[in-house]
Length: 428
Ligand code: ATP
Image 1: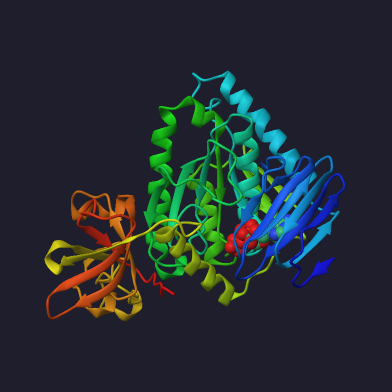
Image 2: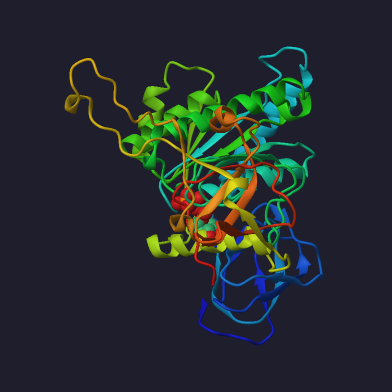
């Protein structure tokens, strides 16, 4: 095991079923290439000979099924070889899913049997859920399927910025550097990084997303047979557990993969025991998964938002735009903390409906907030509409009544209806 800063060009020979675990340095990229054999990064094969430039702060593994030689150039935080991985059990799951996809494809006219596997990946924080989701998607895409990736993890978004639930078809193995292509993701904005900010709103969005996908599948036998991989949050206790069950129900999941927690697995097996068409499978967590504390997660969220505006390799240039207050209509969802029923006069309803649309007046409180641009045509559609993208408020001029914001592109926003939550970002 080599830890620390090493800058020379070096080669690592990997035996079959071993992986090279790397954390790239905090400030410089790492160049890496495959010299001999075959290897993959989280399910995506790496091309022979070609140098890949891996950005700073990335934690990943180069795994080989049959043996490989890897060459690295540049510093790393850590890099070491591991010969114990759960990869065989993961690829076995893939093989089972593949069989189910083939069966679904063979009966396109039957609405029940034509549905491919709907896989929900659950487990505590830092159990490798996103990574397993990614591998299953890439392996499926490599075989020509177009599985749908659903990300319900609002804390650390894999598809788009944090604070959203989102889905996108995966048509090619996911690029280890570029991540998931953002052509047409279906994104619903929650606006907070934990569901406890407004549980009902979160559930509404999960339901909207599921219904939209269901509609898309009904007209697309290929997507339907390919199924879904649904990544969830690491919050698995109390309300978090209720939300997992809610997701399993809402998406009519057929396979639940439980990473690294016996208790969660037996709880799920127990509550789902009367559903013969749902399999609950326990899988081992990889020893390579890197734990992240609250501060690291917070930072990662910031990088993710930065990536949205500036691109994964800092290759996009967002535009700064100025508009009049009157040109934007900003709303938030829910009326703040709800008064307990016991505190109200008998017969009175709590005033704060958690899914009520509340107009927000523009003032300097909006500074540094990330807002979503709704696809809604009318305000009352906002809660059930997905979003076109995001803007970042960089200035609010109360005197001139103008708001300055950063957007991925110049020109008018696709809609004047914006949604605000508590998602902030400090650009640096
Ligand atoms: P969350 O708590 O945010 O839901 P998670 O359970 O989805 O986390 P991942 O995001 O999959 O966990 O993994 C955590 C980190 O560990 C990621 O940065 C990932 O790239 C890294 N990682 C996962 N598996 C490996 C591995 N085998 N070798 C090296 N790094 C890994």
